[in-house]
Length: 148
Length: 98
Image 1 (cartoon, one colour):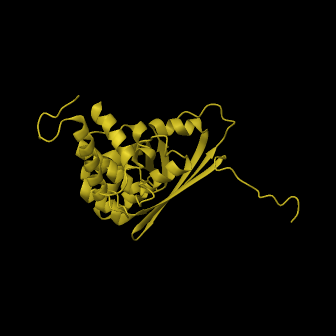
Image 2 (spheres, chains in turn orange, purple):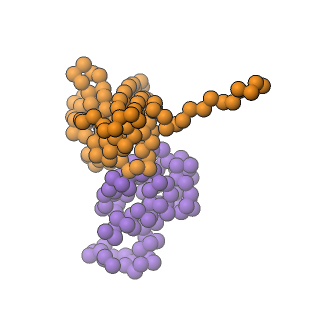
Image 3 (cartoon, rainbow over the protein chains, first blue to last red):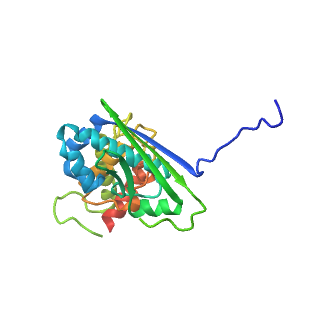
C-alpha cells in the first residue's frame, strides 16, 4: 500500500448537495382518503393543490411526486431538525411542464444561511412509485443571497 | 390548570398524563405503520427504527392534531419531536398547555 493511499473523503456539507425521496403513491392516496382536506391543506400550497386536483386520475401521483420533492429538499439541505413547514417548500410547474423549487419562510432562511445559490429538481413517477431528486449548490463566496 | 368543559374523564394531573399517552398510542396504531405493537412499545423506543417512515410521521402529526385539537408550529416540525412516544407526549403536553 502506497503512502498516498489514504481515502479521498468528501464532506456531506460541501458545496454540492443532493437529496432523493421515493414515495409509494397508494399510501398518498390512502392519506388523502383518510385525512382528506387537512392532508391537502397542511402539506401543499394552493398552486400545488390546484395542479394535483385538476386531473383526478393523476391526483395521487402528482401529490406523491410533490411530497417526494419536499422530502428531497429536506434531505439535500439537512433540514430535518430545523423545523420547516411542508408548504414552505413549493414545487412550481411551468407551462412547458418543467418543475422548479421555490422556498418560503424557514426553508428560505435555511437556504440563505447555507448560501444556496442554485437548486435543481427532477420528478418522475411510474406505477405505484414517485421519486424526486434535488441538487443544490452553495457558494460560500456569496455574502448575500440574491433577492427572490 | 386548564380543564375540559365537557366530556368527562379524569381531570387530575396524573390521570391526564396516562390519557395523553394512550391517545398517542392509538394515533400511532392508526397512522405510524409500525412493525411493533404501538400499545406496548416502550415510551422511549425510536419510532423510526420501529418502521415509521417520514410519510407516516406526517400522518401521525395530522392524527395528533385532529385528536388533540392542536396545531404543531413550524419549529416543532422536526424529526426528533416525533421520534418516540415520550417526545410526542412532551410536545403535545406543551401544545395543550399553551
